[in-house]
Image (cartoon, rainbow, N blue to C red):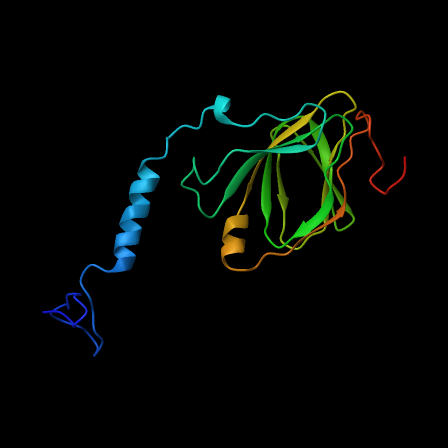
Length: 179
């Protein structure tokens, strides 16, 4: 039996509603599952974009092409010796697993010190900045955050308040517009 549009009706529609057989949603989900199963189980380091040496940079680990994580983004944050991230804030939270180096974060004016092996948490809505405390060694941190989920729910707010800084870079400025 069909509803006139060619879709088959279920024999028991339940509470007065019409229930269809295999729906378009089920077809989309099935297709998405097949896409996810085709993604490699290991992301090789050689396939990741490499950082640019003496600059603050985020090295994206997960992308739409290589990861089934549609609600979490993963990247490696690299902070050069003596460098810092931009001062910024966003609605999503984030976890930083410190792979190497030592430094600190400033969250709403309060300092939090961390080192390799620590996990730093950035709560939602906090104005923050990440600092490398060493003048000779870089910081690398594995960062996980649910930004894609926040974007999908239209809960995105992010603002950069200061630019990143690296004292060793030839064009270094102090982040406040001064040499």
